[in-house]
Picture 1: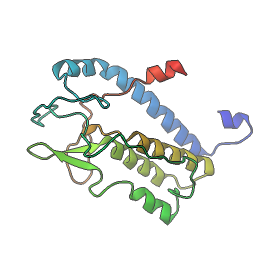
Picture 2 (picture 1 turned 180 degrees about the vertical axis):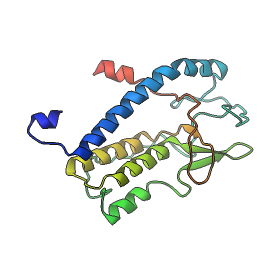
Picture 3 (picture 1 turned 30 degrees about the vertical axis):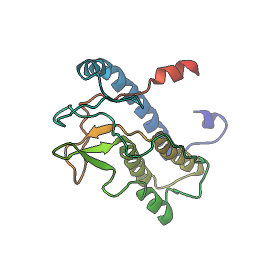
Length: 197
């Protein structure tokens, strides 16, 4: 690894986190390839799915099975910008009472669930789902180092900066929310960024 070549040994926990992040990226790429055909089929079946700020025509959804709007139509203006500094280590510490409290407060009451449709079907908003998982990883790190703290702050701020409002169907609205993975996700193409770099 890069830091080991420079003479900085990595702790086993940091290696585990780096391995986990690399595996997550690999798994995401594999899932995207596998679901590409499913996504194209879903687009053919329901061509009025809202994707990344496109105008959406009014459509009635039953909210049964896969018949629901794929992205939460967030109330209020969504084009406003906020600015955050990634290097801010004063907040969201991994192992202090204040930091743990700040991480816990990233989720709104109800854990970031929204209830839509005539039966108030529960959905998890992707941004909050991502933050919940980062907090779980944070809780598992017992020996934080400065670089690890920086990595967690960076990931947390990138999740917030992207404010992914795609809806994720859940199997139950209370307790442990198990996300249903049967619906393909509409994703920006990372290949464009990858090829341009």
